Image 1 (tube, rainbow, N blue to C red):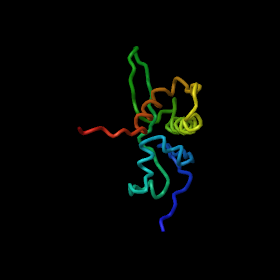
Image 2: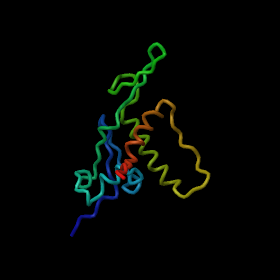
Image 3: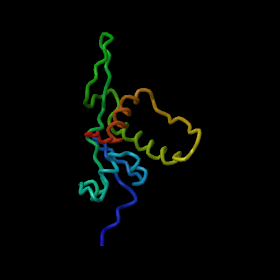
Length: 131
């Protein structure tokens, strides 16, 4: 008899922060849904734990009015745990307002917008068409 998957999954940021969220809420993100699909045979499907090494800190530094983007973990800025926390907040926000009309905007700090946009692109996980 196959073991029933847990109602909760753990999402782990690249800097080690762990977030336990409802499995159904996490399924909003296509990438997470595919990672946790029991038929995928992915380690994440077995363990119920998804580690996101690809959601990283991105820092915008302005030097002589030129924006430079660099990856890493500098002391002055947001680490990936902050980004993944906001993603988890969105997963529940989406579930709460799924069938609602006139949904209020989610509070997103402007300094997180670029990082969240990149995380959303990665997590939606659209598969490109070969046709």
